[in-house]
Image (cartoon, rainbow, N blue to C red; front, side):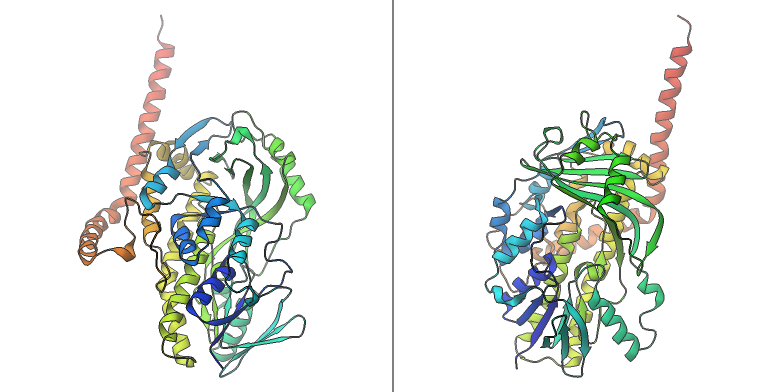
Length: 484
């Protein structure tokens, strides 16, 4: 029998996995517990240029582009709705990489991924997983309907509360006691929750803009398209918790939170309560974050939110999940060229190489996402200063250039061409010449000196800015007190 992969979960990562495996000629099945691969839930999916490059490779970019218009401006407002930042972030993103931010409804994106599959028989809906058995030469996955799928490996793409991960942990601690510690099992923490939803197009929020409204302990994000608005109202949780605890929220919980935030301005002329009343749908969800220490054991490997989860404020979660499955499939494709079956040792080496390539990058992305969440929600005085005084003073293209470093280092499918994907002013790392790499290493070496001192430099910069603000207010007070 040929080498066979069992993918659990047909979300963004699972459907992307099917595309990548089909392009690699690897036999597989994708198991989805729901009866529909594009359920009527969730809000939006944002595709960065590196995600768009992957979609170009698997033939799904054009339908995504037809389904939306590129984003335009990034607006930041204070709690009263006053605008303090109007940034051309998305235009610079496109200038840097040849593609801007593509924004569409999550279920529409899932439908595009499904419709674009060369062979849709690989997707099995209403196929929840009941049990996974790892044997010496295979895995057996028992479904809730009693059927059994047999394969060589299992890829867990089933989200942050992954049943595949639980099965992996159980098997790991049976065969290697204490490998998965209690500390690692509590890696995923929940410090934030969010009202998420979709509303019809609302003029006050623009047609192509991202609007962020900051306040102490919460923030509002709206991403607009001509016909729809996707929104997130993110609120800090009073008592953060970790896995395995999972807070469940009812429609009544969502209504109660929305009512408490109803009078919060989300623009100069719109209150959140008005947006909530116009919603097409809305719900209250947890926002987990964390990156595991172990992404694989035996014949099981994790990808996407089951291994790494980030907060949504900078919209890198879905793109990161696509990245992970691309890297895993690259490593599988390399060893599959001359072998139908893979030994247990080879499978371990493939999984280990995948984790090494992805883990540190995901920790960096998680830390950046967490920082942005805290800055936008004024988590501390430090974050409020960054949001209100430092970021608005940056050059207009600075944020896009900083994100550009993350985008340029993203992986692609090594066995498919990127021909036809537009280029920008920044070069993809995988297209660098040896001369470029030597120059970059020299620049990195020079930067490292600055980076060792960057915290103190930033503190001094902030101190100088605050001193100027205090001095200016002192001058104004003095002028007001001067007799005329």
